[in-house]
Structures are given as C-alpha cells and as structure tokens.
Image (cartoon, rainbow, N blue to C red; front, top):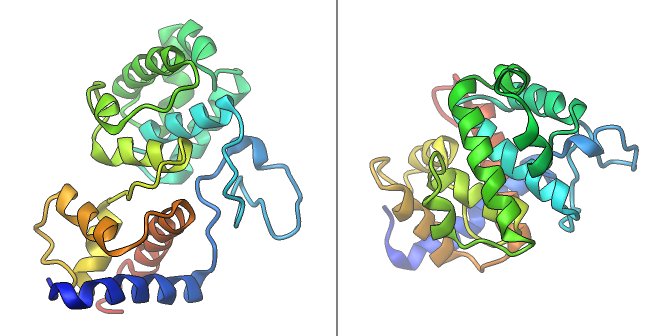
Length: 225
C-alpha cells in the first residue's frame, strides 16, 4: 500500500475519476420505481442524485431483502426474485413470514441458494419487525445468521442511510489493479482505508461503492485499465 501521506488524495482522486467516467449511479435500485418516468432518473428502479430514498419502511425492507438475495449472484437474478416477491405483496416482513416454504423458495429461486436464502429472509424479517423503526447497529446485524460484513454494510449504507463503506470483490479487484492494496487485506482493513481517507458522507459512500462496481464490470476480461 502507498504511504499514509498520499492515501487521502489518492482515494479522492479515484472517486473523481470514476464519477467523471460514469456519473451518478442511483444505486440501490427499487422495484417500485421501475415504472416511474422522472426525466433522467429511474431506469429499472435506479434513482440518480436522489439520496432521500428509501423513503418508506417498505423500501428499507426491500433493500435489505435485496442485500441478502444478492449474495453470490448478479443483480439481474436478484431483480427477478424481488419482482416475484413484489407480485406476492411479500416485500414486507409480516407478508413474507406468512408465505409457505414452497411459495417463498419458488419466488426467490432465480437468486440461487434459495433454501438458505429463504431461511435468511425469514430470520431477518422477524428481526426487522422487531426494530419498530429503529436503525440497527452493525454488530446487531452481524449476529444474525447469514449476515456477513458486506451484507450488513450494504443494509446500513443503502437502506438505513448510515455512512459506512461497503467492500466487495469489485472493490478488492479495482484497488489491487491500482496498486492501492496488495489484495490479501481483510475486509475490515480495506473498509478502514476508505473511512480514514474520506469524509463520512452518505452520498459519497453510496456513489463511490456503486462506481467501483460499475468500473470493475467494465474492466472484466481486460488485461489492464
């Protein structure tokens, strides 16, 4: 890794470069926005520059459910599962918990690992209902079965609007290519790099993570940048 004196500028510079390349991402997509027609905004539920979302408990829950469903699969598959749950009016804790096992697993089958993910969704639904509008802390989320650091941080950042940085395989890939990390660092070490070298700003953290994902997808299969 580079010296401490150069890290802050480097992380700011990478963000500026990626934002110039791709613009605002409007992540996390919301199924209920998919049919809206605000100019330049919602394509398949994306909402560029609108950081007020999620605006309702149902939208908060949808993002959390998506964070569970996206484990080990791409977003296209998750979107299919979320649409199935939406059609069942089950993107809310009580309705999801009321679904029979066969109905729930059939709905989320496109997202893969459907038996495990059904269990995770049920456990999280009961937990979410018990929050009664309160924002959970990170450790609470990590105590839930099937919720690891990436999923917990995704929920906090995008659903509960807590400025905590999300690290995923894309983040590790981009930073390794740039020589900012060796690639063997722990999740928390990489997370700390961002949080120590950037202001704790919700919009910045949301955009930065989404931009890294976009950039890593563009780099896929390329030998260099």
